[in-house]
Length: 360
Image (tube, rainbow, N blue to C red; front, side, top):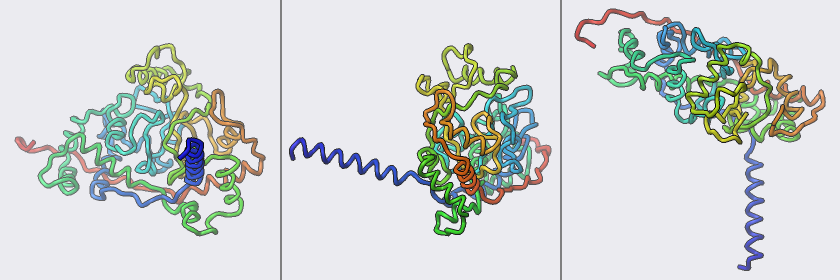
């Protein structure tokens, strides 16, 4: 084949690839979740149990409250007692379908156990030691019995498996009965006219779908949108200290002279990643305000307005110049990605009991 023809073939293949990518970028119905049901049930107890934190005052549910969309409803999370956190607490709903965890994308979405370990053992979240966690579990006979049913007969509770078991529970917390799922499966009546208009904007003029796609509405990548800094991070010394500690333990250079949230840069050390944050899921947005990595937007109207203007300083985005009616339609569509509230009750937690001498 002549070189000119080879170039034509290559160009055609490239264009076909672009067309395929363009077609592929869309939302998708939520798949059936996969998790170990017995371990998830034990994980439910651990998730709500304050004894899983260092001072036995916090549980996973403290920052991921079912009554608040599995978040904590605050712009910036509280953190471990005597500290304050510097980022928003994201919902855990549909976490089993995430590609990356954490706002800076530092953890692999396929490793739920490591996510739980990170949250439980970090000094500024739950400040727990896995070895202490396993001893506390062993001090509860009901937990030991449930463990041997869920894991293995004769097996002793241990720290790493505790993390994995809580992870199985997290995988079980998923959206349900969202209008968008019914619509994507063929029920045209699931969305009203305004919502369908918003969907067309989402895929077309607004081009939200370029980053918000797939079953949870996230590409799993990191982007710079220029969200304004939350002033509380520098105004509150405890939040600032927590941020600087995160930078220090991540090995970020010159961290003491940094007064903004640099996002992924703290992990990669690549200047191109400054200000980049993970694309959040769009599922259950009705229940998860405030929005963004630092909770700077209280409503979806504010979020859409921000994107319509092309984001903030240093943003990768272009201005959309949406009309008022287009903004309303887009918000209406985004609300259709929320289903029924996902409610899981806190179980009655069994108490510690004295263990017989020699049976440790």
